[in-house]
Image (cartoon, rainbow, N blue to C red):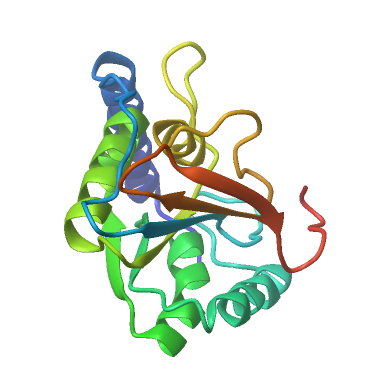
Amino acid sequence: MFPTNRVRSTIAASLSAIFLFMSISCTPLRTDTVLSPAGTTTKIIMVRHAERDDGLDPPLNEEGIIRAEALAAVLENEGVTGLYYPELIRNRETADPIAAISGATRREFNALEIADTKALANTFVEEVLRDHAGGVVVWIGNTGPSIEGVQSGNLQEIYARLGGMGDPPIKYSSFYTIVLHDDMAPTITEGTYGGVSSLD
């Protein structure tokens, strides 16, 4: 069943509002060193959502379902305490297998919260340090939308907020581990999981 013209118009208007918000309301990205609260070490794992087909908000395809389950298997013994991701079907379905084995709390960011990716990055880091100090948090992110010279996707902005240099974790197979210390800059380990993606 295809959306009606009215539904299409509502979707288009919503997207236009989000892009307008993004272009006029981009918050500066904080650049201070991110430290875990005293006496704690906090781990943030960053991945892209698993593979999906084209569309406005598509579910995972067969390859993506396999990758999401592979991600859960990799994280099974990590002690994940929090799952953070945009309120999109592909991100939620990537998180589902992890939630099923970990019992981690979920935090979904809605469309307005994810529109300004620099503000999102600042908020994400603040919430992790407040609610998961000493824990293990997974960010399941996206590469866009981007506005050249204004902001990048949430994966790029969060990676930059955490002090990341070089290539951010934007491939479907990317698996970056950022350890926040209480007395020094974060340490970042770049890795992969689940094999090469047909979309990378």
